[in-house]
Structures are given as C-alpha cells and as structure tokens.
Length: 67
Image (cartoon, rainbow, N blue to C red; front, side):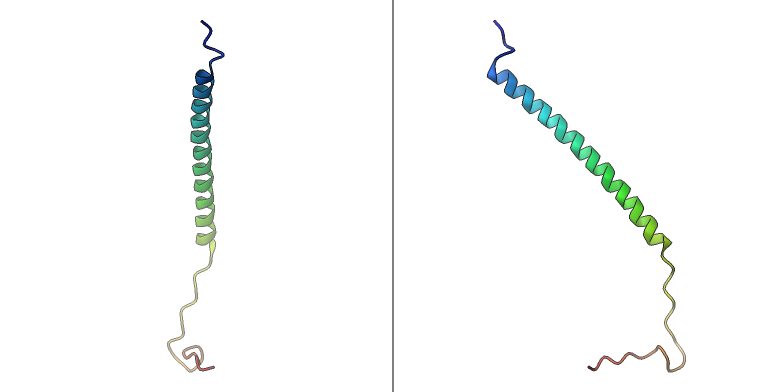
C-alpha cells in the first residue's frame, strides 16, 4: 500500500507546512515591530525638551482664542 499519493496525506502535509509558515511569519512580524519600536523610542528621546512657558511679563502668557 502506497500512502504517499493519498489525498489525505498530501492535505495533512500542506496543512502542517501552512501552520509552520504562519508561525514563522508571525515571528518575523514581531521582530520587525520590536525594531520599529526601538527606533521610534530613539527618535523620541532625541527630541529636545520643550521650553517652559512664560510666567512673567506680557509676552507669551496670554492666547487670544477669539476669532
């Protein structure tokens, strides 16, 4: 009896290969997202600090929101 040509065997083989490929694809996706996260954090940490708001004087303390 030759089971190599059986349709159920070939279907099971394709299903197992599909699961393995899906697992590998998810692993690569997670690694890519981790790399992007690290790059984004590096860019955010490289930004200069925002200047503090004015607390004295007339310049920079009031905003005219009437338009």
